[in-house]
Each structure stands twice: as structure tokens, then as C-alpha cells.
Image (cartoon, rainbow, N blue to C red; front, side, top):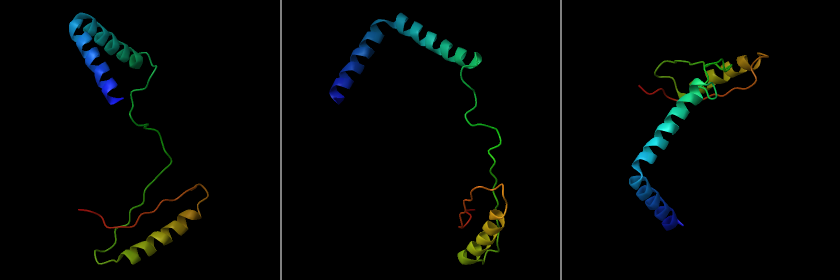
Length: 100
């Protein structure tokens, strides 16, 4: 199967090298078409949506000598406060060490 694919790619490359003008024309046509998709409004230009995702982050900075257990306890207290808010539908918490 891989040999067949390699043979097909070799044949395509040989054909492309023998028909340089056609290959160049198709390449230019595809490039211009892709630009027209953006300018025509068929596809967007943003990689990520800039809208409000309805998420926020809370970061706690405890003293350097605080243990993971103490940090976890503070995080649990914060979770309990957040759970009382009717607009909060889900929580995700991580506890760890901040890298400098």
C-alpha cells in the first residue's frame, strides 16, 4: 500500500516537472481562490473566537512555605463559595506549584 502511494507521488511529481506551466497555473489559481474565500466572506479569518466564553480564572498566591494540603484547602473553600453562585454551571480546579 505504501509502495503504491510512493509510486503515485513519483508519477505526479514527474508529470508536474514535465508540465511546469500547467502546474504553476493551477498553483496560482488555488492561491487566488483561497484568498477569495476569505475576502468573499465564505470563511473567517480568526483562528480563535474573540467572543466572551463565559469563563474566568482565579489564582491564589500563598506564602512560599505553604503546603499543597493548605493550598488545596483554600481551593476547596473557594469552590464552595463559587458553587453557591447560580450562574456558575461547572468548576475546574488545579492545585500545584507555580513555575518561575
